[in-house]
Length: 428
Ligand SMILES: CC(C)(COP(=O)(O)OP(=O)(O)OC[C@H]1O[C@@H](n2cnc3c(N)ncnc32)[C@H](O)[C@@H]1OP(=O)(O)O)[C@@H](O)C(=O)NCCC(=O)NCCS
Image 1 (cartoon, rainbow, N blue to C red):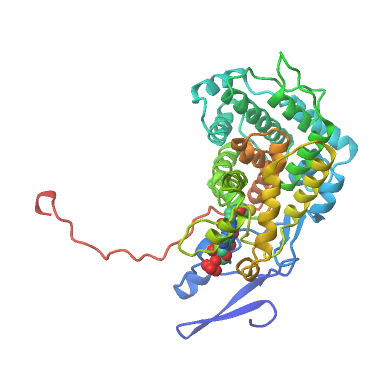
Image 2: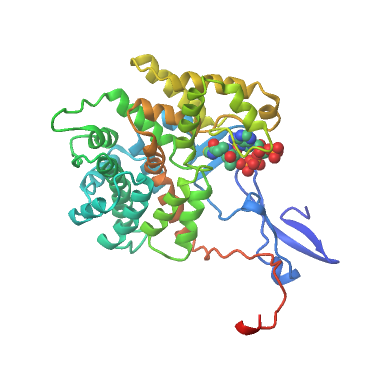
């Protein structure tokens, strides 16, 4: 490091000063934006894990301590004291709502909960067993042809577009599930809150009315808060990447949905449940799976374990575990996968391989079990993550656009052939 606000770098005998960008949480950055112009060199950072793509005031994560704060609030405080609607408002607008603001936001959510009737035809075009994430991504992109593009992030059109997305994604998610079951669609109701509405759209039937258990709605609400934002992760970066080209917000969110689908990211919650089912089919032999995860010649990884940033217990996993205790002790739910998950966690946390590498349960380890207990099928688990993460994507996108950031255009270190002479096809 050079003098207080500069770092010095010497490249081929040339010394340059690089400005230091101070952060409020100690993760300071070195601004290398003039590096190529001044030295002819660029940087290489596999997976961008040492590269800040943005300057952001939304989410603070301390991976070493296992801390997560959203707009300055501890995730524990938000989960214990707020509703998902309040936290969505916090993300999108920057501060927790007053009662009046929350009422106005809730009525926007209600007003915009339906999707255009013409969009219903799209559902029939998908095969019955089509993955709901594929349907969701396609439907969100098509929202852009039914609803006006956002004109300004600073006026009411932003409030409406944000509420429209938060509300409609929940409706599309429930409709995708109904279609996959070959069942009639259940429309949203204004008299129900956000999560009760979702459960009702998923499970109500004209022959067997669905009873909404308030505890189920509460657990779902808390689960969505756990997903709400997590800094510059893969899907958020995808949203910004597409947004940086000034594509519309729906297209950017759809890109986030596709990125989240991957099993190393949001798709891990589905992969965890599938892994636990495999262990159950293997007579609950958790040690076999621990052995597979440790075997360097085996591509298998313990799903729901490890994190690119957390080198400690993921605070969201701790909260999910609390919710498991609350739900399973209050209702007669018996899930053999929960016993397997607990055994697997205990075995991994006492194993040298996992201890040395600081691999702990992440958010996806227990959330799948919770969703199962609420009746949500395995192929909908990543869709649930989307519903929770949406306010975070919108907030991160807005901040990025408001900061007038540049188009994302990384360079490469080219290692291909030099100029080759062209040879006509018959002479090759
Ligand atoms: C999340 C994840 C992609 C982070 O990856 P990462 O930061 O690149 O972690 P690394 O690959 O650097 O892991 C460091 C070491 O731990 C091992 N490791 C990491 N996660 C592991 C897991 N889940 N099971 C077994 N080994 C794991 C790696 O193989 C590596 O071992 P090595 O040092 O012998 O090469 C990774 O932990 C993972 O694949 N987890 C399972 C999928 C998952 O739950 N994703 C949801 C994240 S919220």
